[in-house]
Image (cartoon, rainbow, N blue to C red; front, side):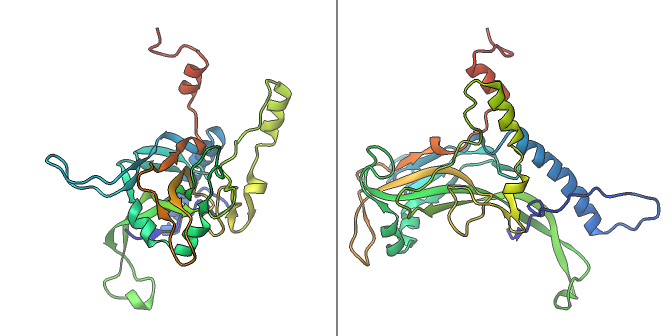
Length: 290
């Protein structure tokens, strides 16, 4: 599926379409109508709920599995379970079926130099962490074209039999990025510690308006600490992955220690806690509780 540029990250607008009898409507008017309703919902979700995992999306490492009498062979992979997340703009990212990344193939495709730079010594990433290659898994919102339908030509190159996308589907991309920093940053808390003080809570709400800092330029969102240079700054952190490996000399990849399990740290990601989950955690009775 071809990808389409999403209009929501644009800092200007949105404006509602003003309808009047006799006004000629074009494609841009219907697009503006969609943008208005999408952006209002996204803004509400971003500020009322925050960014992060809303449900599911657990990342699991599955080792290579040889074929047997009941199961076919399976290569080593990272599996992202189905789930739902809210990105920094308030857009919903939904994964309806499990998605996998073939880890051994990914490792073989990486530059030996970059893998050596992403190698971390014992205890470098966290207490008692083994030595190995560190990478972070991100998910980001993308718009995908679906199907084709006839349309008026938009340039001289498609003046005959011109077509355009029939539908646009909200989709996603998953990316595993090597971390070369000595101490790679992880997502930070979206709210400060109130310390049980209502004054601190009110001040945090006053300071919660992000438009000035999150859209510092026409390029859009400022990067968060967990983003790498050049990365889509709306991408959501899902997990840190550590592949146990031995340090390698110049020109060679760090040799993976296949006998050791690949470590996946899902708990480092930002989470969106629903009201019912929070009530249950606080011991407040909800429907169905006895």
